[in-house]
Image (cartoon, rainbow, N blue to C red; front, side):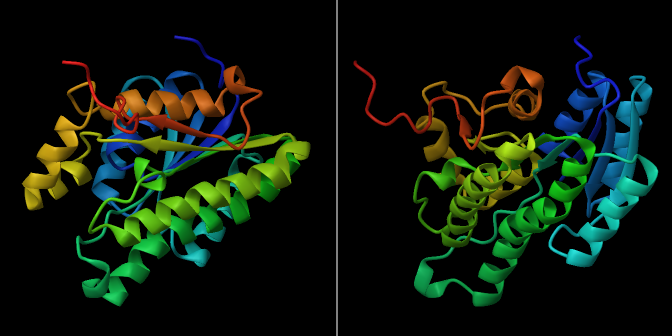
Length: 258
């Protein structure tokens, strides 16, 4: 395994499970000191244990990514303790409920936007100054194939992920000259605990999603995490303002020749 993140400090949100956990493990395995953040303290403890048992280094923090106070406090801690930030994976998110727009509860809509979109804004608001003082870096924001499509019943989720895409492009434009690359990741159907739980609530949607994937399977979280790590690595040094779709072909469109 390459150790191209040796001496680097990386922040991963949503690190208590799924893609975030696998990204934290992957960054660590490549030499990074990882700050793992989540609201799920038990999940964070498990992630830290996995990293430490593999010989890596990590610090954990219970953080509500939609809270400016929590985010600013975390970044101040990273600056105080590590003195730098080289990469950030703004990955925390929720799907919200499934309703037609006219039936969508306004409070639920607002909550999804706070957790999925406001969090990315707040993350970058406080990450970018520290990265500039560190001499540059890379940010990856988790969007979704829902940033490209219009999944019925998921207006809040789709709006938030389209917003992440737009926010990423603006941040990339504003910061490329400062040596900071900003990109987005658009996962498709990933077998994370959140997706599995939502599949149980809406099995028809789950079946439709699986049959719509040319690869005929969902992805494992580690497969998607690898793409996030690549976007933050020097191997992606000329990739700026892009949204990398990792979906097993789900958004290709068209149809298979029979």
